[in-house]
Image (cartoon, rainbow, N blue to C red; front, side, top):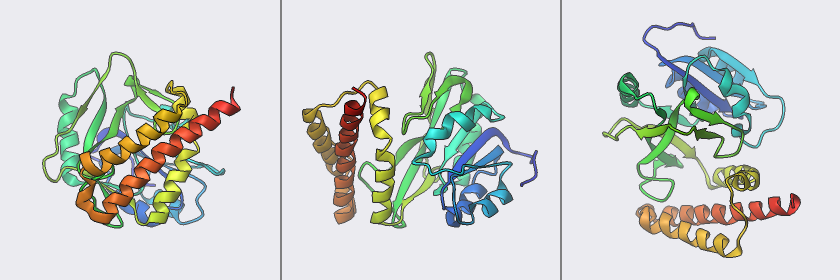
Length: 267
């Protein structure tokens, strides 16, 4: 375990979950050493995740069951953190030194009604920074949350929601102050990631108030492709941009399919 009470750290709890990602976990943990508390949750890995985690974290947990997505355990670990501000990261993310400075300046003057801080982020596919698509270009991703200003649940992609009366802000992109997300290293990894998250989409979409519609399924899927390839300039990434836009539309289509399955099983 790392030494507690490191001078110069910020009152932030970093929460990172790893599933057989020990080979990339170290660089991630190094980039969050500015946080006062670093927590690693090992999602039943059989690699060197534990060995790496214990070098850099303050708290280490092991989940001995197969898990589809870490969101399902947000309400188990996040409410027990030591700081009001916390950040959520995957092992394939890195926070730059410039972004750390931006975070530090933002927290000094942050208003009491702010509970979510978005930061500039670039996704990398197969090691290359994406210029466009819904996955590329400058993306303002949710990174920091104020525990007292959010509801913490366990639904995929929607487990953390702002409480009434709170708002969110974003840190302006200034060239180097961004999070690097080494998102996918292969097409098979992207497919596996999509398939894993899709298993939780039926319940998540239902809780958001959506109900299955054949027309909406096709309309939203086509719009997602257009938005990714045209509006978000996926064409700048050539064939890769076209295929990624197709994958985005595919996920949208299958998300509606999962909602339909969930409704049938629970009607």
